[in-house]
Amino acid sequence: MIFKNLKNEIKLDELFRFEKKTNSYIIDIFVNHYEALYSTLDFSPFKSRDLNDELILYLEDSIEDIPFKYNLLLNINMPQNIHDLTKETKGIKEIKHYFLYLQKKKKKEFYRIYRTAMVNFITGILFIFAISIIKKNISVTNLIWEIVIEGFYVGGWVFLWEFFSLLFLDPNKEKSKLKQYQRVLDSKIGYTYHNNTR
Image (tube, rainbow, N blue to C red; front, side, top):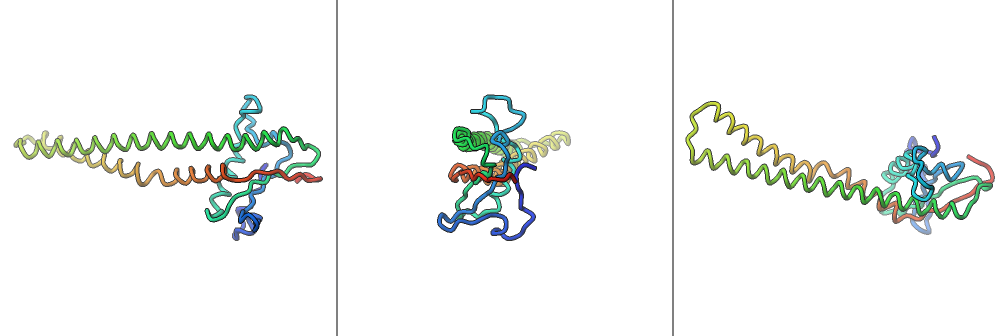
């Protein structure tokens, strides 16, 4: 495991260091080299590489533990002998850039969810309205047609339930993700170099 995870502890102050001056909790990331921040499966140029999946999961889990009333500081711990200012600056930019990409991607997913929800809403209303008109103005005595009409009626309510589910139930967790990504974008990212590796 590359990234130090202390989630087995209970108290927030035991999970993360706290900086009173900035009212921030510090999320420490421990790596032995700059390339450890990036995905080993991404062979694109260093400038646009994806982040390590473990790093993303670790940050998401850590941010969930820290209340919104506190700021965040991301502190990347590395050995002193590999200090490289150019890679350090690029690393900070890439972390911000990647979470901005995740945020934009999540917003597109929300657009798709809302569009699907509205289609379900309109379809459900049309089904219920049409069946109500038919039942009111046409006398249906055939058992098969009664079953078909009731099926469409139930189908209309199913579409409406999907509308409410997509719009009010399912997105809650995804909205939380958006807030997490924004907290990373708003956070300060720094490096701490140590004489001994961890």
